[in-house]
Image (cartoon, rainbow, N blue to C red):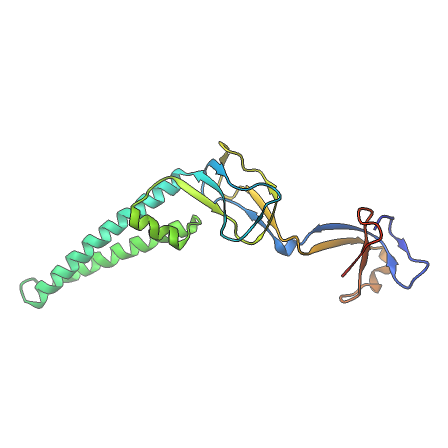
Length: 215
């Protein structure tokens, strides 16, 4: 609406100024979950992307440490598992004392807990389950941390540039679903009681001459 807020003289409706904004319920800030340095940016403003698409890659010492820790806990878990199995067989054959088996069982459970905690650390950094499975297979402890699109949408803002040092929680991209918009209306205070949920709205914009947007 191109004019200032005013009462409509020709209809029982109300003519007011409005401003189009992104739908606040369909917008997402994309932030890394660890500190790092931007190695590569895959998408730019205006690109339409799907949830799960890689937007950027970081070099992150925290990610490398988390991967290495996870792989170490898996090795320890395998050793403790073998020890428990051996002690169980010895105990069943009355060759080993029960306390030795109980000790091996406790150490195995602690190793399993450590491995689970290390895996959750990777998940908390944003790694996907299939990525973690690949780390297990390849024993990859690289410092690469991929940043994924959390939802489908269009990139409306990008601050990430190659070589940039970023902190955890710093927004690198903003994604928005452009299929709907919000209209912010400037209503005269003496007309507020006339507005309620469900009333039809007709918006016109100078950029769209002769076209009415209904909502």
